Length: 634
Ligand code: OTU
Image (cartoon, rainbow, N blue to C red; front, side):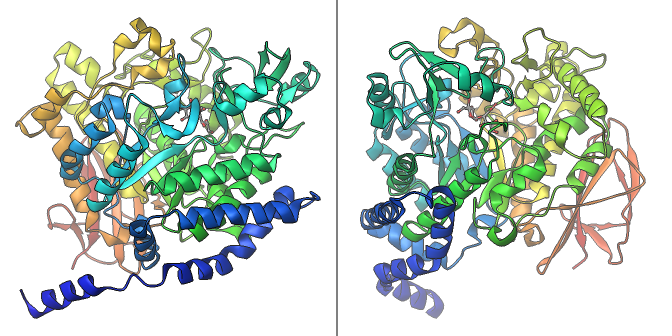
């Protein structure tokens, strides 16, 4: 051992954990104002506000007291590196427990596979105990304190979280905070007429108010779950259900609901969960005469949760799931005086949707315009950049994206996208399907795996080598841009191997005719075994992606923030630019199937290709769908 190593190990062995409770007291002081101001926006006019605050503080204390020494130590470590989630070695992977590895124990066995790809963040889709029968892929939770018995137990979850942490992988799970299933004990009590629990939900004795609300509401599952209210036979009353009829929206105007959700969050954080995906946050607060999305109170709820969790479990990160136009989306990271005080992370659904738009059009003109108009995000926040997830690609949100395009133009464009990805336009390379349209002509969303939407399915069916090559290039282009945009890139299970659509779901009653199962595939480990076999598609995708991941980890110019879009004279090419104290980086991608030339604007330094280290002139030539990463020469 070198002197330095000896010194280091001595330090570690004898390292005082510090006084965790003293640190807790300090955090309570620091976050008290934030917590109180957010809570008073929500509940300040109530007579029992002081009592409520006392109850909330009791929950925070209990949350801290029940936190293990290990996690308290981890909290202190993270507080020494608050920008840990903005580091360029953070890469996410998302999957269903059963479809990836059967059980939680199975997931643990697959840690080496994740590490091989360079994964440092694992999002396991809903794994808490769901209702029986239809369950929206687990998004209808019946018990927040127990794991789905098919996957294992809460103890298995804690063990997995610890094992992941030991491997520097952060565990993320969903906090389905907008609704419970109709089989949750609160819903069961409500059904039996218990007023305390009826107040946990939004009940109406008849259709008068529901009809008035409906005038301004949108429909999420327009085909399979039309309307936003469900008749509850036991009571002959109506309850608010934004999603499926068995998912009952919680009533946050009742502070008891807020307290329950805070306690749930802290309980799960104490199992070792580091990142919470806050599901459906736009819908948390209802208000007559509005579309009941993105209300100021929904933001106050998140701000209060953030301040309170920062007291009890400061290493925890909150991630917003809001599929809304970018000017609304960035607000979930906090804005104005509250900038950086809501979620730490938010899904960049604008980037995701616009990537598919650019790929279908074969030009980067529109994506460049839209990305250039995305408002800046707070310095202590970051994006989650992704290409596919378990949901459909929702086109309608684009209609409010930028004023550069009129409503008519957006409507025509999203109609084109929906048709293109369902293979209903001439020359479409994609084989996806429309989601939630009643007549096949409406525009809602698109289902399909990344590879099938990028053309691999058609190319393989046709046995056309040139098209196979092009579809692999499209896949790598999409990865290159999400890795080069900034934030935490997220890989959807199977997409690292180019897995195709699963067309069998229609024959399986468990999937309730929900078209999203088209791309919710089960891991094919035989395909994974081909990831190092030369010339296989799996190898080209997997190795292409892992090379990019490794490259990215060393490029600190990418840390945090978001890319700036540079305009060039060539519309086919998207050029992203990063500059921070650590350096500068250009990422350019050709969205067309032709060779494209362009000149980087306003560059004075000599440039080198980050992958090869070779000098690169400011005039660049890119092959079809090719990307290039450039930095000033060292
Ligand atoms: C989320 O998605 C989940 O991701 C879905 O899988 C669930 O079905 C749903 O919630 C209900 O729990 O509409 O098309 O703006 O758009 O929360 C997906 C946010 C969805 C919503 C989003 C929702």
